[in-house]
Image (cartoon, rainbow, N blue to C red; front, top):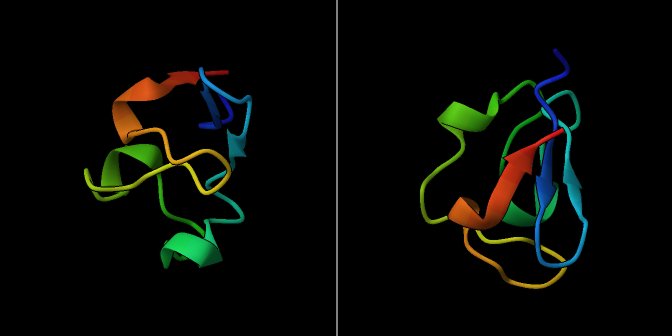
Length: 53
């Protein structure tokens, strides 16, 4: 399993190997360790709007 997550609103892919610098999420951060306040950097959707790939 890749651990990647997809935004159900816009299709943005969160990849734990890359993290998300715009949201200050370090590379290597698994989805369950991403802060609950995380918002999609592309469309602003909340973390709950992501689904596993």
